[in-house]
Length: 281
Image: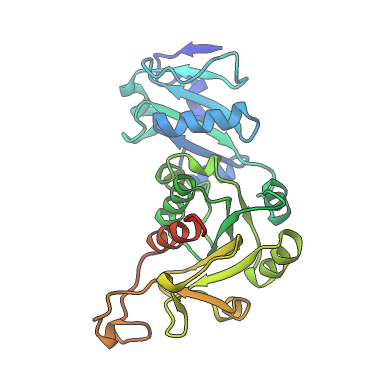
């Protein structure tokens, strides 16, 4: 059922008044989705039973919902009222409140969604704490065709409002899992899914990307921009690839140099993922 609301004090709008991430997590485990395209992708996941929705608030011109397809309440309000209630201007006329699952997907859940044979490419994020990078990597993974994303316990929450928006809603499309530590996940994926792991790290001894070959079933590990991949994980990754700079790069700006150049995590993930997914000879 779709209901039009004109009173900003209407109690039915209460779910949209306190939409800071920390408030929503505390309020029964919820998250906020904003902007028409992102809300549309979220509702597609709801229809496919891959996500749950608590309520939707739309400007009248946003025709994103068939009321017969979702059971949650859908409210219509003009843009001025939406802004007054939510407290910000960047919703574009579409806000949805989602319900978090009782637990985050784990490695077994992800493996169950992967093909049992044939090409498989995962991206592993070790200690990547930037919301922007997490959202960007989900968007990149969707655009390039990655099979899924694995996050360790230190990686940022994919269900934060900014991350969801930066991902353009791809957090609801790309399979993902949370694992405690990659030191344990790497051998588990090798034994249960025949997946080899490659560290993408700016090390002198790493294979330059243009010389690298990728196995058919692979996980690419991307580390924190400031600290890189932790040593405990690197020891599990005998295969290491670096994204090399120009051949005339001064030594102090190369790997290990005093003024070492580096790429941010999302950019490094995009370059490595594109190389791993290119057609194999």
